Image (cartoon, rainbow over all chains, first blue to last red):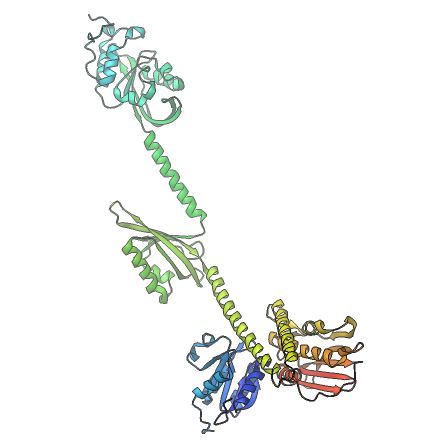
Length: 125
Length: 491
């Protein structure tokens, strides 16, 4: 399994317990560090505002609430993020059309490629 | 003096001409009638006879008290199969089906009066069967040499065709009116180029128009739709074809609705459009349902993808560090069944949430060996679909573990699940769920954490935003979940 050249500090936002565990395991497998997991919108927004992180994996539907406010906070902080959703690209808010998105279910290789596609070096942190 | 009865080729000279009727009159034996032979006819009668035979208008002369009938070719056409027997007959007998009517005609006419009927309806037998006919009838007295009325002249113009045509048209108009009244559709009329809306009956959906309006587009169309609706209209005008178009409208109440509009061009004889007549059906509800269905399908697709991702996650956990593949496969199948049941629970509640007690019962009941060895009781709360799903999977893991290693693995052990709500020191509501195994075989902590423990300790705790503690006491496993009551429950 590929290992990240530069380990990233990653926030996982995912409301499905089993999927959250899977994504966490995938990220660890890729050599990254999962700094925290948020399963609902308030906690996700809080962590997006305060946590020290390089990247976030964002589920779109958090128990019936859309995670776009979290995306906005991350955007303001200049922190990159990847959407991960069963809706696929068509489920994104028009403001985020074209933004990196993983359609569930996805493979660890796809996750790795999506992260690599962001061109992060980790140097800025 | 010429004899009234004559041989072939010896036809009387009077009356000259008059076609078929003239010939019949010349050859008729008038001595059998009250008129007597023609030689004895007064000049007035002769003159009248001659005159009517030369007329293209259907005329019949009713002479004497009996009203003996003398008529022309135009009249014989009208008389149908009653001709030629009608000639020389008494009018009351000749037209016996309307004897009363003609009795009045004779009385009035012979006393010097006139009668005029327009589109008089009568039932006549002209082709062997009763027939409704309409006629314009004008009766005037005909004086003889003494100056007194000796007969009645009738000008008979049949108007049946016209009356029937008018009747048909009237019925057609009434049907049309009834149709436009009966339909719930919006009805409208627009000018040939649609520059004005002449009339519109909005049926409560749209604003009514009683007199022509030029800026009708502003009244009914949304600015952003205007161009495409006008293009559809322009196309129909160019083709002189039916316009059919579904578009949004500004309703009378100000809301935005949808109509399916159909308009047909009314053409003149040269094929030019005179105006458009249209009907529009309010399809707002249908559009709303379609939109709703689209969302439901979209949502369903999302859930299917999500369930596949969950399946993927459970498979990854189940087959991690496999020592016994057959057992792992079995565990995986059981977990899929649990996932399926959890979905049932949620769809049964229409995905709006499920009850805590219900979720626990449903997930552990299938594994319980005997009814009395399983107790679920306590305070119930409503869970969000997500939380219910997570709890169901966690309870499934606890139940299968109990069956394999714990209280349900021997004949006497019991599992009780108790839930209770309570107030935390800060006043917030919390829920405590206790899974307690007892009377089973002696328990020792497992060598390593399996999927069940991981799911409960790592997953469920975070899912419920609380703490989960698994305590492998020698008497049996105790698992305590302590979480905020309302934080993740759907309100």
